[in-house]
Image (cartoon, rainbow, N blue to C red; front, top):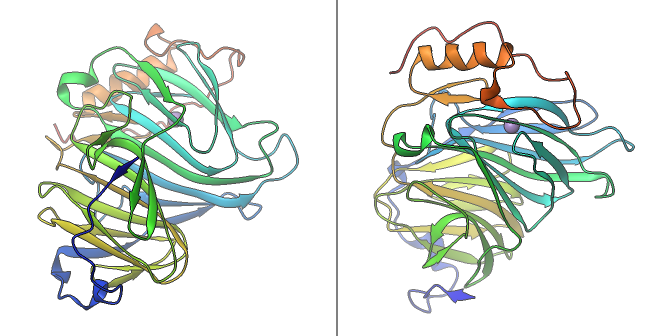
Length: 318
Ligand code: MN
């Protein structure tokens, strides 16, 4: 346990009374996709107005949803990735992950699983048998910097993650580094990911590295920050330069806060690939379609896989 110093003993109400630089904040609408049966995914990144927050380039809020009988639910056949890390963080339920490195792992709440795609990897994700009928969580991608993105694929897990104790909240650090703690898997860019549970009417003050930009995505409940009310289905963005982020829970609230130093370069993201140029995307696409050894084979699926879309991106950001 580590303790983040509270700045002083101000009464809770002063959390929102202070004048804030509300121009540094932007409230954006996530894009909701109904997968049927009341199963909704809300995409907070990328959005037209905001492609990345630090190295974070993809953020989905999955559920909460009641899954159908055994055999229904999440069913994502083998598909490839390049140039990114996948971070799966669950509040409820379980996901069976299988990849071309030979890992077969049940991802469960509280444990962290990170797959670093590097030059190339493939995996499948399904509802895990025996993990209950509900699913709720977040799926995130982290763009890899030039120095790492061409390297070998790896899969890492942490059975537990650092828990920070703050006034009025508990926080699991599920990615990167924050408040002197570090999640014990490999990270390649200054960044963090926090999962906070804040009691009603409590105010939490998070010290933010001044060079970080920040995103706030509510899983459950409602909070006030940066002069805005944030509920599920929204992403609150804060520009770099905040030394502190104040979150006031209107009701009991569970919230994901991600942050990071602005990324080193623009990326080109297409389907499951993060690259820099259209040629790189075209090559990876062709190699997936031709079953090139670059992406290996996910055990147990035979020839079953997700085909790549046919339409390549129009322009290169390289
Ligand atoms: Mn994937």
